Image (cartoon, rainbow, N blue to C red; front, side):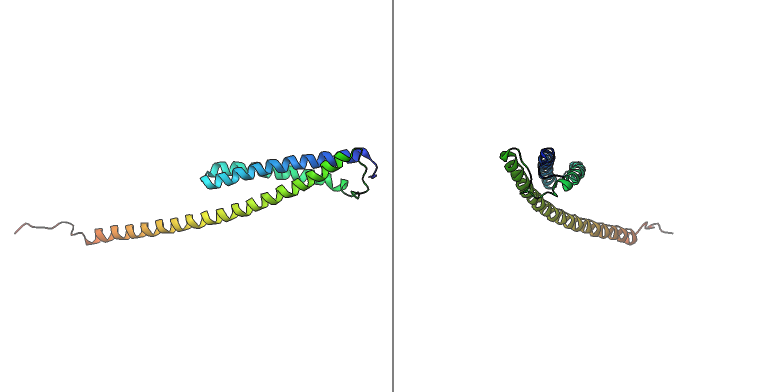
Amino acid sequence: MSPHDDSETQRLLHCVQSKFELVEQLFELTCQQMDCLESSEVEDLLTVLGQKQFLFDQIAEVREKLEPLLSVDPDQRYWRDPQERQQCRELVQRCKERMQEILRMEESSLGRLTERKQLISEQLNYMSSAQRVDSAYSQQQWIDSPGTLDLSSE
């Protein structure tokens, strides 16, 4: 690819714009994911996670298209309009910042899931213990019950 090839530069800008739009969608879905975790909506959470996977796949496709375009030194790349160059830089920077926000949210989400898992585990252990106690008590009552008492005299 020639650094003076305007069509390649336009493809680069288009790919960067596409990636930014996908990252913005990913951010919105990550916000929805956080809401689902707070409200314990498991079905909605699974739907959001499926949508996020689709976006990850699309981002990977855009990244593949970007790789050969990034082989040109940015300072040597031809831009027909300096504003396009600035727009591309800003989009790349905003994309990085948004991805950092998403990663922070994902870490928080993971922490929240770990807390929920621990709480559910404790609740299940409590329920299991209560069930064992109830079962033992019920068996003890049956064993200790006098059954029938013959009060007839012969």
